[in-house]
Image 1 (cartoon, rainbow, N blue to C red):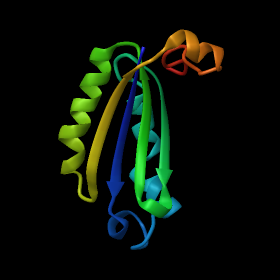
Image 2 (image 1 turned 180 degrees about the horizontal axis):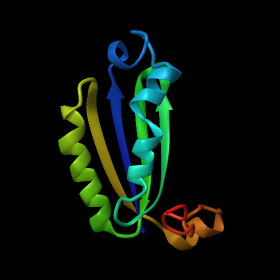
Image 3 (image 1 turned 180 degrees about the vertical axis):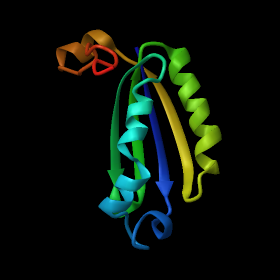
Image 4 (image 1 turned 90 degrees about the vertical axis):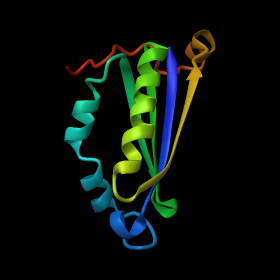
Length: 117
């Protein structure tokens, strides 16, 4: 298993009130349909979505079954995200998961991939 972290900045003038993100803009920027499509990504086991309203940042934390699938998503993010107006400072990190230790500390790494599909 491989863990992918993608982070990026959101321009508060586009996605917020000029100083921080607001909940309505976050909801319109990341609609439920986007999550439904992402749930179909090859090799995706799960994704956690986060935002930091005060810092105008957003993150995605992904668990993939293979490094290739994680690398493909990271490459897509690095190429496509900067083309979206108001998104900048895109960063990706890929980590190998230490599965045995993660299970001891109850990480949800054994959830079935895409159980709702």
